[in-house]
Image (cartoon, rainbow over all chains, first blue to last red; front, side, top):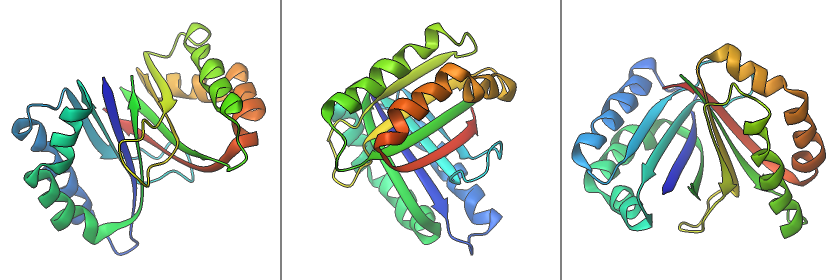
Length: 97
Length: 97
């Protein structure tokens, strides 16, 4: 299985509405991309200081299925319209599990 | 459930042996910390450019169980002896799933 992980920090100017919209829009993707085996997206809960703001963890059967998700037009639209406008930092890893 | 996610970049000087040792040492933790419900740790597989080097995803029933892991002496020893010497960058999020 391939696990795709992305962490984000948001800009200082990002509003709560914009941040919530990212959750809403990403939450639609599992219904649109059947290759997604498991999908969790959400904000840092504030247990520790110095953490980043938001995480996405997506599981796929194989790399090809991950690439379908990565390049999916609906996913790309969420990135372009809702994530990029408020992103300050991004860190990603694809790992084999 | 609480999901703890950490991404790392390693220093240029980090050896393959040092990186492999991190996997080995972290892999012992599920047998030592019963609060861990799920644990995956591994290197980026190289599908994309610009990714970070290594990821850890750990699931717990609740925040208190995560804190047991975070503060566990065996875990802290792995961080001090095997991770900190080769870490260049670290990004973490704790999310509710």
